Image 1 (tube, rainbow, N blue to C red):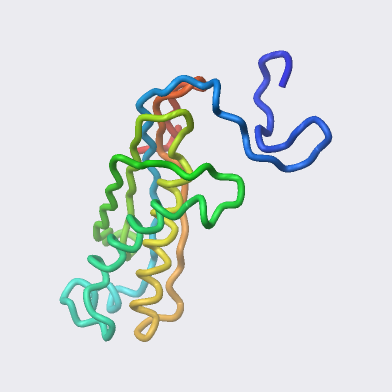
Image 2 (cartoon, rainbow, N blue to C red; image 1 turned 90 degrees about the vertical axis):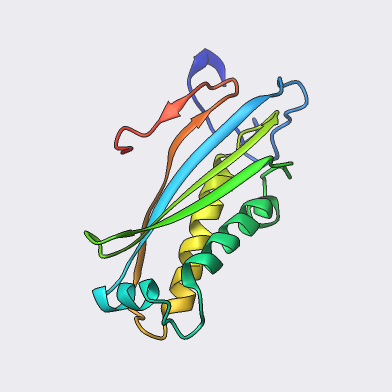
Length: 165
């Protein structure tokens, strides 16, 4: 895009979707952090906390699902590059104010393209897994707040969401 203004990198000059060519980009350490939450009834949160959900360990299963999803992002999002991630973490914490669970994911690599989509995918799938595992108790759960909190590395530089805690 000319003039230094940000544009849509996955749209070519003729308006067609395409995968961005990153072959000339420098390899840098790239880290992205994303978050989201699952709001639920206080009773559902208590079931999860006490380990009494019918399907088993909700938090442990959601954590593994998020990590697995980050590794499969290119299979899910059509124009994402397959990446060799060097680290993915998914943390899930109780938040009594929701009430519910907050999910935070960090994705990291040394490479030519960022890991924002991997962190966002990890959060999304972890939240979906929480919903799936607890839906027998609470079909009214609400998934929300999925957003990029921060990212570092690459040509575009660092970013921190203005409302990041």
